[in-house]
Image (cartoon, rainbow, N blue to C red; front, side):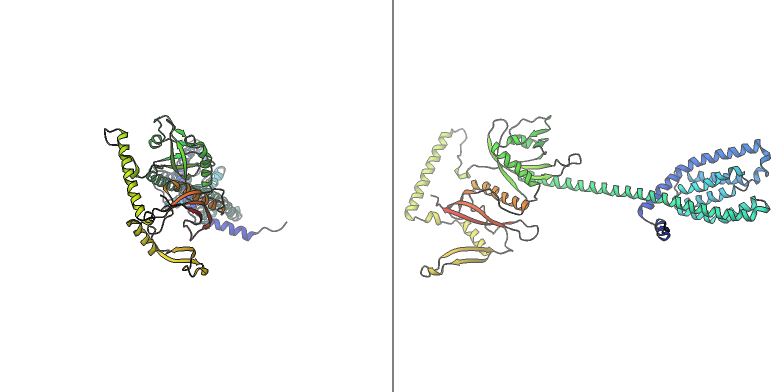
Length: 524
């Protein structure tokens, strides 16, 4: 059958004795409060026992040899009552030393009262001494006190027994007390270990709940910051459910969609205000946002709710985590910014106050005629002056961009020496330390009406790269009207294509490498 591993058993049990974890101290503090509650019940039982002993002396005086004032049982019960009364006193504080003092008093008193106690009541004293260890904050100290009281137990047994049985009886008392101490130690330490595990589980749960609350507070701060940021850059900022419904629509979205404010409306369907041809693009855009952290936006065509008028809008999307009840149904935080498609201010018609529109259109036609005559005279003097003229602002921007240049790579044709070496390709590399405001911008080359198309095309490639690691998509970008910054020259791009996405450094925005096949068209 094999012998038990006594060494491992003793080592594991000894680890329970020397364990000084925080959960044990916390459990002992709760035991101290529990001891005060049980002391009140033990006080009542002790008082009833004192009344019982007094009645026994009154009705059965022959059972008691010594008078009341010489009976140790009576005085020990009174001492126990005094200790219990002091333990459960109102608004009293039990220190560790006080708790140990009560434990010593209780054990010694229970032993002394057995000198003049009838044999039938001796088991009650033994059980009481063992029970006190279950409620003290230091069970190991209770076991040590019982071991220390072993000589007193032998002395009491020596005084109680006859001369003929004293030696054998004292030996049996020593064996019985040792077995009782070991059994008491096993029981108390095992109960103490189980309570410590329970307390440690409660502490871990409290830490988890506290961390969850801190995470929720931090998430709320981030969401409030995102809402403030979207409210600054967008016309309205709303919360969207998983089923494309706006939660508690604000006045901004109602004014944007030309809807009447209704206090009872808690949800507003959002997908119906997007044109049918863009609804599938918006749904795909929202689905891709769950698999990537790339910042993105989408240009869509929207319609108002009252008159059905159409307008262009740019939608920014932020994912919201799901709640505890609906973990699989996360929400969104969307920002809607309207896009102005009107021409620049110098081409707008100015309507004077109290004047009809026709009168102002005549003045506009006259201004157009004068401008046309000036342009014709200018083109007659020089055919290319309107194309190559650079204003002062364009010169300043070009000068700043040239200062930021770090390297120019040229591919020249060596067979064109008589023509001065024709340049087949040129690549401009700017300094890494150059400020962002001096670097040339892509949108400064693209006409304003084509910028949303280019941005959607770029975001489609970026989202695909973040989701799959490849920027190959079926999205095309053709017929883009571009211009040369600082001049009036323009050209038409046949199709935009990407050669790949290169990410420089951790956490930086990926850079697109562009290849353009274009057809030049000079604007008249």
